[in-house]
Image: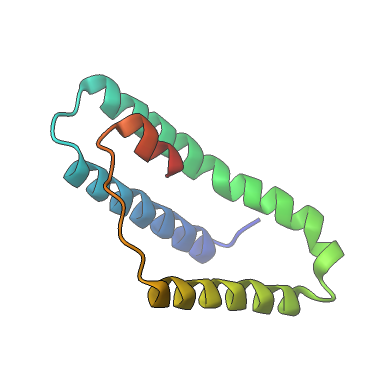
Length: 109
């Protein structure tokens, strides 16, 4: 069981994440229907509630398997992300035009 401080930290982090995405969506969309508001609210609430539960369940099952080399796994993942970011910065590809259809763009969030 989490202590109250850790629970509060996770709650604040998830709320900030949902707030940032909602700001991005509201800046992206011009005419929002009640149906879209309900769908987005439901999906955000559902996934924000399920992600910590899924992470806890997965972590408790996989923790024993990777405990001997978890630091190397974290090093490789962060190193790979850093190399990918540097590569994308140096290749300087042209940006794509964003599609204004909410069903395609929000599904990745």
